[in-house]
Length: 380
Image (cartoon, one colour):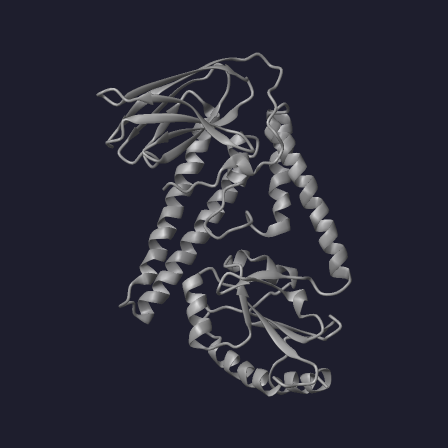
C-alpha cells in the first residue's frame, strides 16, 4: 500500500542536537520484484526528500552509507517499488533491512531496537488498512444481497475496531519509544483523530512523559509537548464556548460538505443521534418525517440535524437515500469512537435533544406527541 500517513504532522522544526555525529550503514537484500532501484528518504516535520539511491545487484543486495547522522534517532524511509518502510536512524547504527516477496509485509530489521519496534507496529497497521480497503471494495458488487451487505458491514466494523485497539495497545505498551510517537500520528482512512478528538491528549501526554525519561533531548519530545499545549488550549476554549450554550458540532453530510450545528441559530433544532448500522431507524425516521413536514411552514423555522453514529459510509448513504431523509444528515464515520455523542453524553441510540431558537436545550429524548406539543410552543 502506497498510502502512508507520515510523521511530518509534528509541527516543530527538528533541530540537530549537539551530540556527537557519526556514520550509519544500511544494507540488505530485496527479492521478489522487478524494480532495480532502492531509495533512502529523509523525513522532517515540514518536508521529505530523497537523499541517496542504490541499484540492486543480481542477487538483490543493496547498501547505503550516511555521514553526519546525530546520536538522537530521526525518521527516514526506504523506498522500493513505490512503497515505503519507515526507519529510525541514529549515529553509529548498522542496520540490515531485508524483504522477500511483498516489500512491506515481509520485511525484517536487525540492528536497531527502535526500528524493530516500528516494524511491529507498521506491518500490522498497514496490513489492517489493506484489509479494510478490500472489504470496502466489495460494497461495489452489483449483486450484493442484504444479508451479504450486513455481513460486510459487520466484518468492516470488527476489523476497524480491532486495528484501533491494537494501535492504542502498542502506544501504551511502548510509550517510552519513538515508535510510539510515530504510532500516535497514524490514521485510518477517513479518521481525523487518534481516538476521540480532544481526549486524545491523554495518549499524547502519556508518551511525552515517558519520552522525558528515555529521550530527553529528542526534538520529537519538544514537538509533542507543543502539541499537548495546543490541545489543552483548544479544550479550554471549547469548555468556555459550551458554557454559553450547547456543544457545537461540525460534521460532513453525504456529499462531503461540512455543516455546523450553530449555523442553525435562530431556528428550533432537533439534534438527533441514530445509527444506520443498528437497523432500527426506519420507523422512527418515518415518524420524524411526518413531524418535519407538519412544521415546514411554521413561523419559527424548524430543522433536524441528524448525526449518524456509523463507520460504514456506503451503509449510511444508502440508508439516507432509501429513506429519503429531507433534513441535514451528517456523520464523521468513526462509529463508537465518534466525538459528537460523547460531547452530549449519549449512552444509547437513538437519542435526541431539542434546542430552541435562543440556543437552549429544552428537552431530551422527546418523541411522538410530546415532541409535537413542544414544537407547537416553540415554533409560534
